Image (cartoon, rainbow, N blue to C red):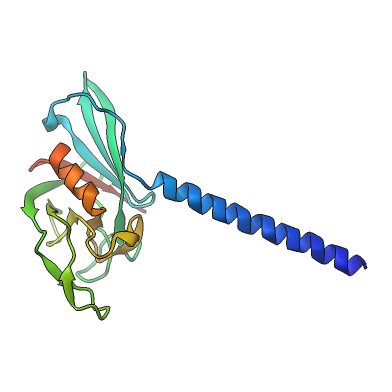
Length: 189
C-alpha cells in the first residue's frame, strides 16, 4: 500500500505541474497581444523602435514632453535560429551595434508579394500589407512585415531573418508610428 500512496502523490505532483503549464501558456497568450500604452500626441520624428529578440517584442518609444515614453508594443516572430546574422540564409535576425541603430529605408506596399518557404505550400502571399525595409548596413532584404499565411508563428521563432508581425499589427504600426528614417534597434537574444 505504501507504493500506491507514493504513486498517488507522484501523480498529484505531475497533474499540478501540467495544470501550471497550461495556465502559464494561457497567461502567455494574453500577454502576446498588441498594447498601446500612450494615446496622446507626440512629434513622430522623435519615435523609434526597439526589438527584443529574447522577449519576441517590438516596442515603439517617443519623446513626450522631453521624456522617453513607451508608446506601444507588438508581439513578433524573429529568425528561426538564435544569434546575430552571420551569412545570407542562416535564418538569423541581424542585431544592431550598440549606439548604431538600423533605419527604416522604405515603406513598401507588399500585399501582393509572394514567397516560397520550401514547405510544400509553393509561392504564397507572405508579407502582409506593408514591408518596412531596414538599412542594416550589411544585409539586404531584411524588414519588418506582416505574417500572411503564418500568423500562428507570432510570437516566436520562425522567420528567415525578418521581423514578422501579425497582419493587423503591421498596418497599425505603419499607420500610427512608422516613418522613413525611423531608428530601429534590434537587441541580442
